[in-house]
Image (cartoon, rainbow, N blue to C red; front, side, top):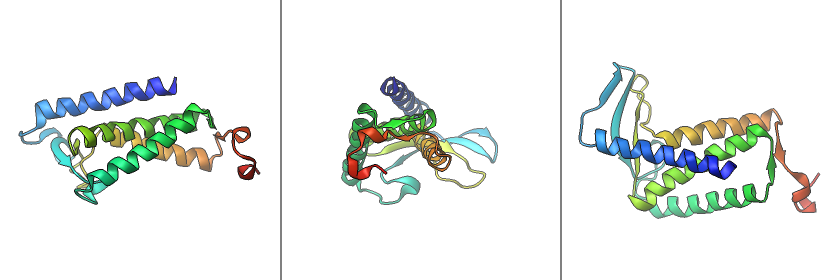
Length: 158
């Protein structure tokens, strides 16, 4: 079920990016709330906040390894707890969504622009990754769910 949900979220991300390309590319920013929030088409060949520009293959390899490991661990049911599984599902969907862009386009399409605080322009996949990371931190801090210990090698069990 988690993979089905992740696939739906990836499809949602890709749909919003396709719509951004059709309606925003080559256009001025579409203002939704003057001075606060607008839709602005940009491409990002780097990571968050455009760091490590033009390092496409590094991002592709790291993303493939991370997403592959996460898929393998989820498939083996190494995690439990609703908050943890939801968080990992969001991280997986966001990671795959941005990975698709990097492989297919050579860059990631971004369009959400919080101009009030001059924040980085981002996309739906970035929202998934951020919410998933916050949820993951909460799950760890609140000790909600965790690794299913009987599936871990003995040396990792307490």
